[in-house]
Image (cartoon, rainbow, N blue to C red; front, side, top):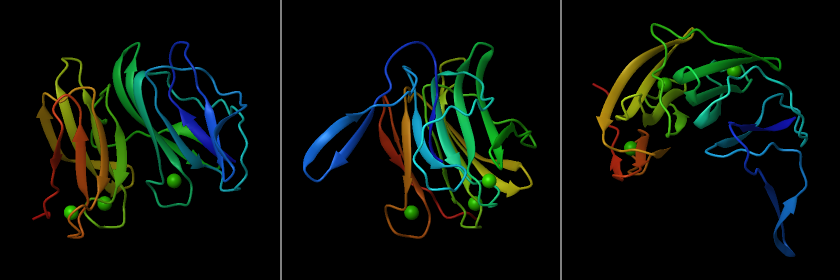
Length: 202
Ligand SMILES: [Ca+2]
Ligand SMILES: [Ca+2]
Ligand SMILES: [Ca+2]
């Protein structure tokens, strides 16, 4: 099942548009739930290649001003899920492991991920060791902006690699090797946009 991951809160709209050679984008009928201050991402979590929309009732915690991403953080061929945002009990960032379609929260170590909202999360192999690392932006409970990088050490262990604080709020990020030096770089945009170059690890 090729799946769409949505974060959720409140009533708004979720729409799906299709494209063909002979026409512009048109609305595709679907049963996607309406949401606002949300995020979405595509992933084939069960690797069957089929396009279907079925709520599998994955036990993901409801969040607002959230971000979501798919990642195979264990390199086992199954897409896992990370969500970050504002829950009723505060801001959280939580990783869920996909075990043949069953999603369960991961007790990441040595410490939980920083809880952030109004941001984005992305995965890339920042140190070129074959494991996807986490890049996370957003605001904490004190409205301080963060850009955080966690290095994936394997066995559900994530080392805090960098925590760059700033006044960047309502942020979004993306990752690419813009200068072709073999190391992934981060673009951060928000109230104070800019580019942060990823330096070669010592
Ligand atoms: Ca996986
Ligand atoms: Ca890595
Ligand atoms: Ca680079």
